[in-house]
Image (tube, rainbow, N blue to C red):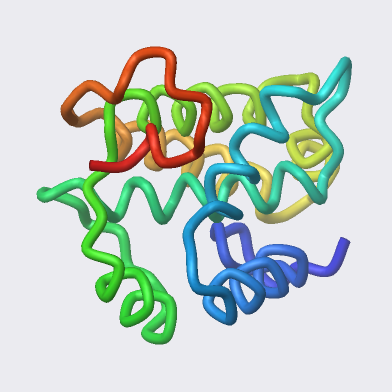
Length: 151
């Protein structure tokens, strides 16, 4: 896996996912990235984990008290959407980050084997978990569309 840092957007997989996201017109890929981690059996593959961490970072940036710093092009695209997450989306993002940070994640295993950066990655994942601790309205119960995650 090609990385240049421990940050959420500091790997090729996350960068390619972000490019695809901003080239599109909707935020469905964000929800799909988080749901893919939830659906993964046994180990969470690194590509899914990288996308989910990037997606969770975007969700965290919607926290009114967020200190998340998004790349400029992503920030501009995301602010145009004027989205407010629901509690369902926050829960999905929290669960994905928890799973990516666990021993069943290939991304976690990758960082555990790095002489440098492993502790930084764990710290950043912990910080992301904190950024996702905010309240949002409840979504529509029983709605199967990805729109249930947004107000």
